[in-house]
Image (cartoon, rainbow over all chains, first blue to last red; front, side, top):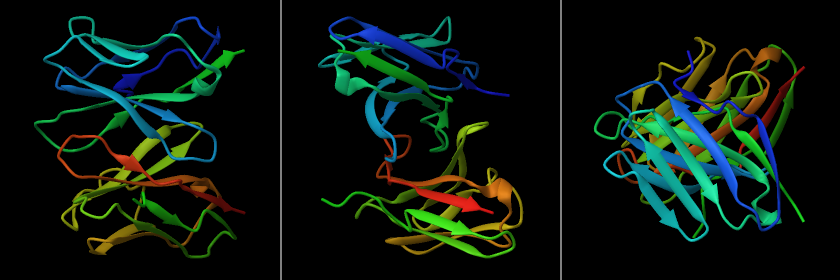
Length: 113
Length: 113
């Protein structure tokens, strides 16, 4: 049973517009959430994270929103750039517990020039 | 600074052969993780070490898989005997704090024929 779900496998947006990537989780014990970006033939790279004590975290063009009651988080990229084209993974952990990260299956973002 | 180093980058072997994947974590990191990525299952944690001690190996698929971390700067993941269904990309990651960001290596693409 998947505890972290990225239900849309792909998203295509125009350069300069907003990209919104969604993620749902089922385990209410998760209290720390991360987004990773992955280019082909490379390992995932950390992008941004959020603790469950917050509902928003911003870093430049990237903002992550957390809705604990809905067990939902989203990553907003604005403005989107062609270099943002990659696979994005949502991940979650119980920070007070083990160090395990549980990953979603990923979403492929394509930003068209 | 050097990131996580994995070798080999590509491995092609025949069914029944032993395969050894290697990882050098980032210096100073005390946690090391082995992941496997497949189309069907996404990115799944196989095993992780903290201070060279295996903490959770519940993701190791079966006895054919084994992992060791003889010191803080080296880990191996061994598959013996290998099977075609083991074909996947294997990632190693390391982190410096509990529940915090993990830094991934470039991965080893394993093909078992």
